[in-house]
Image (cartoon, rainbow, N blue to C red; front, side):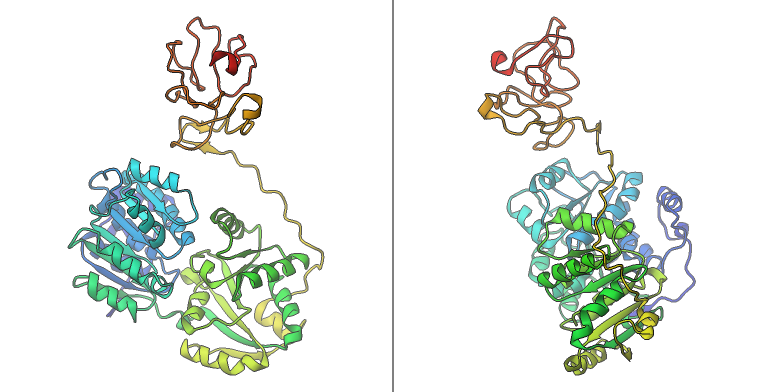
Length: 508
């Protein structure tokens, strides 16, 4: 393995198209991280690349930019992506997708995502329209392939991001099945913090003479990260956790179960700490909103389980707290990787009771960590010095309402949706219905009035009658041939745009 320590060139010296370099510059990204400078030229040449680096080292653009450039060379057919990026968690999939889309637009590539916990209909429609680059978790992608909604036969570039985490989470069989379906002799890019065990098997089986680059030391050796072992008495632990969480700055607290995450989160909220929990028992929409609040600073503490936290890539987390010790040293390193990202400083603090000290020392030894040990009590000056802990308000925190945001689709602001829900008991049906500017199955302005489809969809929404009633209205339904009005789809028996009253039950 080679370790790249040469002077880092600028992005325009790596072989990237000028439009991508210009977009990077507009986004304030002017100097490549070492992993990017090392791997982008090889990836653009079509070589297999094996990148070894910790979380937060800039790997997303390292593999993402070359993938976009190569995948944009030819338009993807329906249901047949040209490049595949496999990641272990939903959160990481969304972050990779969002990170790549600004650069995808400038080269004319489409980026889609396929993850569990989200709408099958949306994902199937996105695949049907065609995407050059597909970001996916192994489980949902396997499901869609079995349903015939996706075919990997055109995939010429495969990326495995956080490969060690995927293997640790038990995805090795599914990953192997998926890689067996891509084009033979295609390009493979694999990025991982460690290269042992199942990761080494993937490298030997699916990579052809890869160029190997290691640009970051292991997580435990990052000089900007401090490690502390805090010895606490069981009776003091909850209060110490609360005081640490009340500190200034973003803090993530790790626990061993969903129940513990919810319990401790509620404890902190009652003490006045803006906090939320994150675990696999929550729906994807709730997890996405919680991460957004954490990223935007509307909550300052996040209580998470290992599974949910594997995809948390949020800058500015300067303290990781192991409220419950992890089960193994790899989990310790992955937890610690949430802080000290991209050159920033951070600290990892583990709370241990007297009967856990031997286990904690063995865990840290296996992780290669030299941690400072302290005996602390609630309110100690030493606790504040190490963690920034402070006394909370002890008044329950009430979450303020979320700011109202204008929601836009491809056709502009939404004006409809389901206005009255299902109204069959009134002889009606749906008052809202389907908007025409979104994929089939989503709701918008126009729609059904009598519970039946009355023809094809109108331009702005709803369904146009199949009777010759004149030209279509832009807002949905049809316009009467004598210009006196027509069926709008969003009113029940009310006046039309041009004054005449139409009742759904009478018209149909």
